[in-house]
View (tube, rainbow, N blue to C red):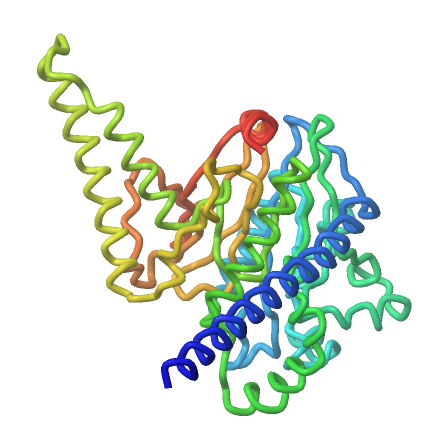
Length: 390
């Protein structure tokens, strides 16, 4: 009996080791093919030279539908179009639409175009001034079918593009290319969404429930970008990232920085010290409240770390988030030699999870729309960190 038990243990251990070896080899093969694919994007994509005077805004994941209650884009559409027309267009920004712009896995291309003439008129204004670039995602990949039949922005689509900043590469692509399952399963997902989710009124979500898979996409992009010493800007996961940091990571770093500048007791003027202390304490309190609210939501993905188990945080992956958030939307801006993650919201809607300090909020003209810069840093500094840490 003892011998049989020992034999069973040996066989069980052997089976476990076999499975482990198989999974390691499978992941290596998967990583090999994804890296080759991303290398082809890096080598063959259209390059646009930018400098300190360049102004660029990157949006992704609009998921534009039929302008009805099932349309994910509808919730923030008025604010989005107002910003394009009255802010980004007159201020000279180049508009990059980074994938999943039209929701073509649920709707026909011509229906979407028919229902949103005012939006496409705005896109065409940017395009007429050669300030628009459109990149495909997994939800609008079939735009390639119409490329030769139309004479507008959708005849000039790309899978990726490179922003060349002083010889440093910023690769802009949607992000689904970092997942074999998304590449191979696009057709299957399309029919599931169009014939099951759409009739039932099931909408897209700003964060995927399949957290481990989405985190792997970020992991692949992070590893690839760090090895190539580039910046990658993606969408796809709907999770805003800045310098490879998640929402909670950013808040923790902000608290750490505030603690480091907290004045010493032996400072000269007690009144000035008291004012500085009060300001810093208020900021720390607000950041703590934001973290607490994120944890109270009990959404693992929002507080999941994005540091990818590396010794150093390499700022190689950014994510513009999405335009279909319930509490507003996010974007990546590049201007004045800086890159920023910005958030827009409508003050008429209750935004319980955001407690921004007043000095960081900017009202958009006389509207109820507001903008806040969540994080900003110098592109030169970021590439310096990549050079020495990657």
